[in-house]
Length: 210
Image (tube, rainbow, N blue to C red; front, side, top):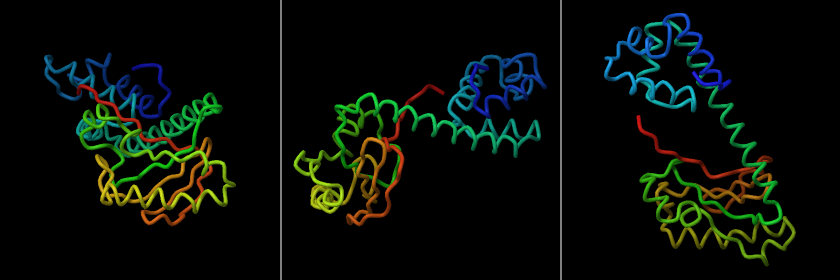
């Protein structure tokens, strides 16, 4: 295992130390992978320890052979929460570093958090083209209480032009008015839902070989 302090990584390290001499021995001796499939098993194991996500089947298998299913579930949840906090902190630091050039924007929210057709999504412009709505400087110069209602025409225009869809993300469900360290959530009709006092950033997607 790596040096990560993610709860899932720590728990799996403990399980492996209890049952095998090394990761590869755990993959073959405990999980029953064939020798030629050890690399595949290690990739799938590491995907979980590094991200808290991965092939559910390997976690189910570890749960069955170790009887540690509930502990694994709790560790997965804790790891995901830790990663969310890390992403939020990284984004906040990035925003603070770019404070002089950061411009608030509107972000269109769809039914899917991960784009369908991620490669095409990235190659065709990504969030900047498909989900981000630029806000005129004249509007940003207004006091906040005047900015919020003034955003409605921009939301209406996006909804009309896109036919109520967020391409790659499904049906339009709302908008976020994204500022440096906080954001405002709106429904798909432009109604204000809440003020969220923490940074917002579009989801980060990655593609890996498993």
